[in-house]
Length: 387
Image (cartoon, rainbow, N blue to C red; front, side):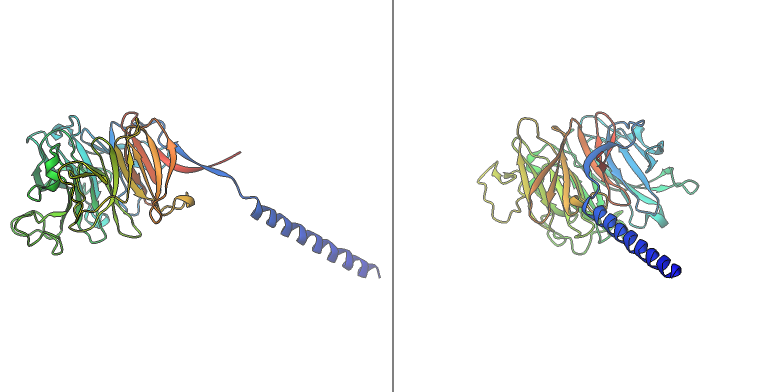
């Protein structure tokens, strides 16, 4: 009888404790941890000198490469306590006056095996030139580039000290895309005989016809005697920053406006994006016949403080679930950062900062970073747990 009572008591204890565990689990499910989206100063003790680009080599390491306008690329391990080192310095050959400088960096899709990377800069030894060059990593140290390995792929005239564009990006097709501003001459956006005011597309692996690169056989103006074969799309003023969505493969561009409108474009082969006939969707010059033109997917007007778009990235990370599938971009003048839903094109203000936003970047996990050209700091979009 005693043993039977002990058995019953034990059974009741088991049932009661099991119920408590289930109730605790239910409470944990119904009471999630509250968080808020923040911009964290990710390398607080390490400002950079006028950062204009952030790139990940996507080579299995967790490194970030920070491009400094005056001609230096820094490399840093992706932890807040890391200290950067110089990956490449070509400052002796970079003209960094006004909007000139070392403006873009892209790693070869097979960088892990071939060590190739590409830069876009304005050299000091030739007037009004944009130069696209290939370099190689040192054989002895993956954190140091071989400064003597420069191989010039492409040079083209880019007059004036403004509107340089300067971004480089590889598409899923393996081709290198180059953003080129109109060089301060607003007529260049509609001139297919100049590289300026366009997005260019070249094959860096298969040079041909005496060039140091090839022309992809599906480039839209390949057989057009009145257009340069390298042009992929045109009608831009200053496509300062651009990036590919790693899910859809779409190329997103933030094109800096003139006096009234900033615009965001999704790039299609052979299309005309309107400048200088149109600034965004507004008539700017001439008859303003919009037939055959591609208007921006989103635009915003200057409001007294905003006035220079800095293109960003479609968010594909994991830390900020609410941002997935949204294009994160900002404004250089106002410091505002927005999230644009790529399906509905609804726009949401995320932050109103005092950062002079020069560029966005992503790490190997596609988490987003922001740079301030004036304070030299790198910020990361993160979730902070509320107390």
